[in-house]
Image (cartoon, rainbow, N blue to C red):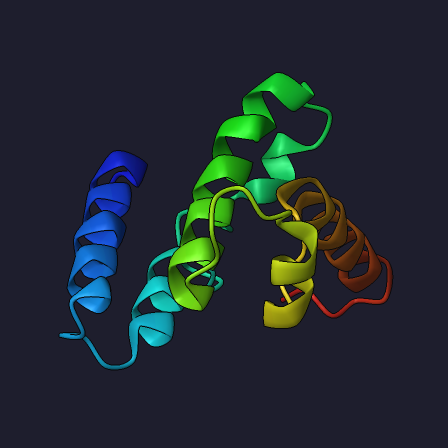
Length: 111
């Protein structure tokens, strides 16, 4: 599923949530964006060294997902929301993924 399709699904789910029609919206958004096989994490180690301008697009998708889950207003700062959900910002996700891959390759954990 393309990122634009996932965004559309997320916004539709958010509208349904605001009307009180969806239970487990956090599970839906997490499975779409934040699971290891999800678009936001898929090959994100390739994004290491990419300019901040390009990562800003992915960060805005993550921020929108966090705001939908927590019903946070757009004017509120996003960092406390991400911390509450235990989500790293996109740049840190990329760095963490690369560090994990390096550790596993150096210690023979990759098969």
